[in-house]
Length: 115
Image 1 (cartoon, one colour):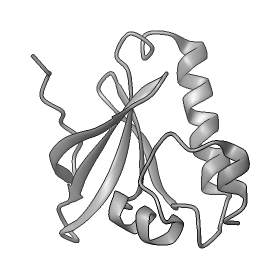
Image 2: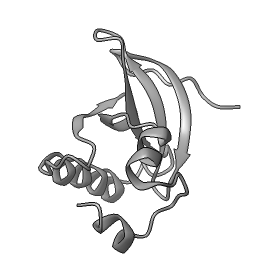
Image 3: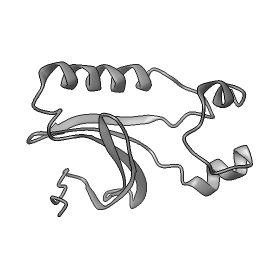
């Protein structure tokens, strides 16, 4: 059973992806009523200061990247024991239109061709 996710200002969490360090959820920014993607560090990694720092550096580095083909980082934060990165939400149909496929994961060399 999945624990309830509570991050102030966001609701309607729906898991859309799993990674090595975090799960990604589609959520809604309540004040703007728009969808966002929230990357949430796994609880067992959120107990480790090294992983927390690595996750924070990822958010800071990604926030510096500005490119039309890369989602923007909106926020990074902590709520209780949960560490999260909020990003623009891009559904797979948008990716499919841009690339001609919705298969994932994408190889970095293949993705680089769209930059």
